[in-house]
Image 1: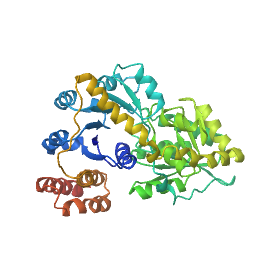
Image 2: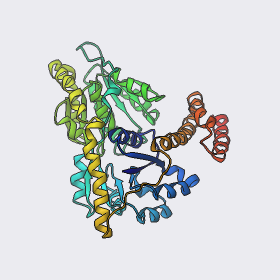
Image 3: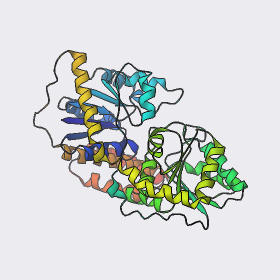
Image 4: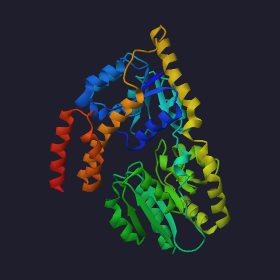
Length: 403
């Protein structure tokens, strides 16, 4: 089967899913394309659609512009749209995704929710991880002495959005006020705006910047427990990454945390319940037997979410997309077999374009060395068109000298 995965980019959570699907389905041909490339290479995207069997939108299709929404609604091949989560004011996500043949969700919470809000079939296929990526992670488990290190990871653009950093700040404040010896380790974008909050409540914190996937995972060697205070999530993926690293988790009852932690490995708390979250941290720090029990179970729980273990779920997802398309169109789907670029080669090219976009983001944030280093391969490659190279050079020079 030929499958086209469409994402915003391939270096954040959607990209992790795309790369995971490739690893889960090695016998199928998986292609990539980014919606950010539409304004430069939309004709390439249209040609690729004509040669694949299923298109899977990992990107939130409600964010497409009006012209592209019209195209999405009229794609003539079996189509899947992923809905990661739905906040209280985001029913429009379901309404747009319903134009696909199948809606995909990554946690049981949203299987039930979307099933009650859409006539389009909803199928669950979980997020995953590759356990081998975590074999070299050596967690520094809490011994009962010294500061108890809480970790939080991800992009946090605001205090009162679905990630509920305001709840995390309240939890930290109560722990500090109760003379609990804690430290906060944070990783990702957007945390700078909370430095004053952390300083005001008197919590010691360290912000680790993202520089590579390998260093990102090393984060789990620095913490004793991972903390998630979100109200709405499909994942979050760091829940599984923490468990795979052997580090216990404290999380609100959301997304994949609800699925995984019911089996152990941490503590689930009601959403927005500061007292429950504080009690969970105290329990993990002071009940050493409970803490070690959670740590001992974590890797086995995470192994259930290994991408190869998810093969059957994703096979079912893609087969159901074709079956539903056949029912909707009253004819059988004819599988594509025309000779085109090998999927592995096409993915490499798309990831080079992805590197250019990520490089511009890094330069825009002032990470000049890492940004320029990331751009070297695509700039030197003969597989990236000259117009895009020139556009990158012009834009990057502006970013470089601006910062």
